[in-house]
Length: 242
Length: 242
Image (cartoon, rainbow over all chains, first blue to last red; front, side):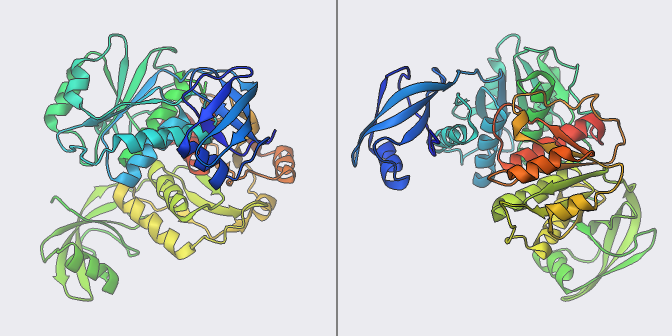
């Protein structure tokens, strides 16, 4: 087997199932990665687990892969959302990539008073999330939502979901979430933009019943570090890293 | 006060102490940041806490700052080392920056069988660590060691220091370190290079009495993600995030 490619496809996977690939994936598989008929590819679609596929037909702009055996069952993403305010391109890419690796169900970029997130390129970030999932062995790709104003996200907050807000005012307090949240609590983490939240935003967050301010240690973390740290703490305390 | 610059200086700080700055820092303070006489600067040196300094003399290639008041006491870095194998430049920069923000006492790059770390630029990474400390409000700068072969680091391992090794073979097991390590245990985390450790290296690590394999969740993390996750888990369980 020794598949050197792991590929997300938006088609059903199952024993003997043929998977047609279009021009872009054919170019990647057969031109860039130089796979030929008989070569192995790992496939996942976010629903049917991971499958070993084999190249049956390899043409310049299309191809067919045949599912031979399931190599991993479908696993569900831990029920955690990441809310963050997109920053410079390189750091935004980083946040999306890390959220996929560490494991979240949904990435929700938000605009805030001090960050209008003009630079959010939704199509690019979707592709980026798929690539990260291909790389890290996940059988799911987190939902990557389009950017929304934080106010609007908070106004339609789903009942029962805890929102862990990385509140800089708590710097220095305990960051350990162990025993602090019930396992299987649907959750989200919210990290602020460079420049932080406005006083108005902070007051609103503090007043909301589903918001729980958390500390991320004694130092000031950059936005992307805060995002990663908050996800790790949640994962280890109540997520799929337990 | 409202200091817009936070600066690491390698000179004593104390009430009324004058701090001379050389050509490089003078250029940064007076040309780039456009500070003039009377402007405030935050200063730290890794020993005397953080001080509010005021520009007393601002010339093209030199200047003098006067310490006015201590703004934070000296805090010690948590006794954690990070051992990692330098990877591509951008991701190595990232690891050093995050180690400083999250808090470690020492960054120790290591060469391994599958990574000869030719790209480690020690002078650049030292400067990078100082910059990260200036940015995150730490009063210390972690020691950034020059690259050494992993074998040699293991051969001269200090007694009593635990080495938490991010072992991919434990993927899926619990990653929660809460209650697993005694507080105040001097520790280090070791994350592997892209391509992982060789079988020989793994066998050696497993046989060493001070090595403790740990899991970082069910997915395969990139080296820089593993470094950040391992530091966060340690910090929350026994470090200065408790």
